[in-house]
Length: 215
Ligand code: A1S
Ligand code: SAM
Image (tube, rainbow, N blue to C red):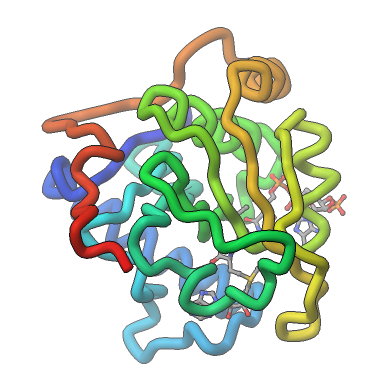
């Protein structure tokens, strides 16, 4: 059965092969399928500035095979919205706080796009954030995410108006983490309870952020 594994720098040695595989899948999907050409790398791995010791990955793994992934990054550090997309935030300043993380690189492999793995991954982000005391996540997404989140009862607020990014209307949003959203998406996923797998050493996501280096 597909489980969602929490991978941080603290337990990463247990997931070296899975992390390598996930970077290859990301390149296949985001460069090959989604044509995000600026991410092209000669080693065919999608690795950017936000893949480092401060990243938390939630990997969907079935029989030792990665079938989906997503990542969270502290907003108290320079992150994608603050570095690349600050112009998408016009209704307030870029949200930056120890309990706000940026959510990126969400994918499910083609063979698993039946909605089920997707719902498990959406449940996983709510579950992880609730466990860690993360109250909100930010994201920059194409507009088609809005009805998907509405269906999952995610509480989503725009941070600005949609802007064209490589031909796609794209919006920055702030999403509340809540027990209600988790319950709704667990119901859609057919999950009765907790679904995250935590192996090896664990540290609180918020407290190990090197806050002193934040800009
Ligand atoms: C974003 C940052 C994150 C942190 C949030 O009937 P359909 O096929 O129209 O139903 C589709 C569409 O409504 C919509 N959808 C999916 N991809 C779309 C696209 N490229 N353009 C417009 N609409 C799109 O979602 C419905 C269901 O999609 P699906 O692929 O059939 O199934 P599933 O299992 O729900 O998987 C959805 C995801 C997004 C996970 C999967 O399509 C995927 O991995 N896509 C490639 C990676 C990607 O684009 N990720 C989002 C950017 S990061
Ligand atoms: N939220 C998205 C994610 O999950 O990574 C990215 C934002 S937007 C929907 C997609 C655009 O962001 C694409 O044109 C892609 O090339 C660009 N992009 C993704 N990662 C980037 C990075 N690290 N630096 C600059 N642009 C990036």
